[in-house]
Amino acid sequence: MKEQITITPDQGKGLRLDKFLVNYYKNFSRNYLQKAIENGKVLVNKKTVTPHYFLKEGDILKLNITPPPIVKIKPNKQVKFKVIKEDKDFLVIDKPAGLVVHPAEGVHEPTLVDGLLAHYPKLAAVGEDKLRPGIVHRLDREVSGLLVVAKNQEMFNHLKKQFQERTIDKEYIGLVLGQVQTPSGIIDFPLARSKTKHGKTAARPHEDEGIEATTHFEVIKLFKNFTLLKIKIATGRTHQIRAHLAAFSHPIVGDKLYKPAKWKVNKNLGRLFLHASKLAFLDLQNKRQEFVSSLPIELENFLINLQ
Image 1 (cartoon, rainbow, N blue to C red):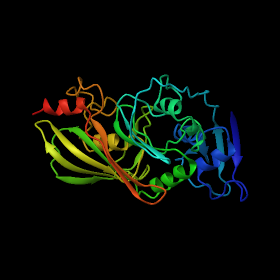
Image 2 (image 1 turned 60 degrees about the horizontal axis):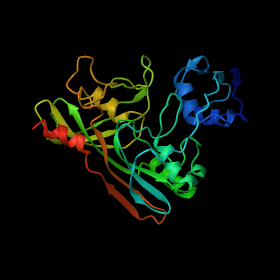
Image 3 (image 1 turned 135 degrees about the vertical axis):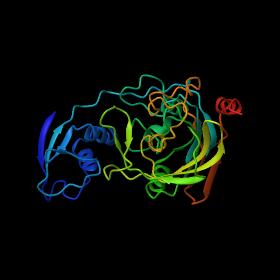
Image 4 (image 1 turned 45 degrees about the vertical axis):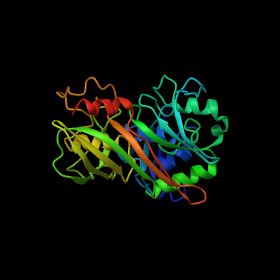
């Protein structure tokens, strides 16, 4: 649907573009609208902008947004996942690699949400998006490890606030190509959606364009052609760790999307060597909850073969 809107003091002024569109298209999810903005389906004064652009009086929006395809949740008890902790307010899941967290356009397979709703049907009423009930953060399909799911709206809002304020502790273990020469460091390249490849995030080391993102790393062990890293992220952008480390010239082993064209050393792994190993947050009583997950056996075996 093609539309043109002029921002007035009473309509949109001071609002972030994605939030304005969520109010305008009440049946579209914010994630869908953010992708539409990033894909050039929304122009402000004939220019592309980010979803975080703040609207000003007189801005002219040209919209060419088609309705999203209908995506449904199908509760499925066959979806396998491990529950590390079950509380009246939350679940902590150890997600296996290969499992998509939630249904979305282009996903044609059972997801973690399908499995969760088969066992916890009341989750359907939790959250802000019916396709992401209880989900406040996610892991990529080929990333394994810890994920917290809210079981009620109060906990959802509590966790969401902690993520927004960056007080959630998340730590990953990752194996990267090459030997990282510094024992620790920070990667803070701005991130933006790739202009050349759909579904890819571009790190821009020499530009101001993009969204702020910060990744901390620490060397655990050096191998002949690899480095095992402890990774912590201060922000939770799409593909942040993968895009940052690739731009740092040390892509994650097993990453087919971000690997250099000639890199073939990871062809037998079958997944990303990236595991969400630690997660800590405050529960509704403001008591710190902390969880640890060991490397899956396939990653342990991969390391043993590097010795």
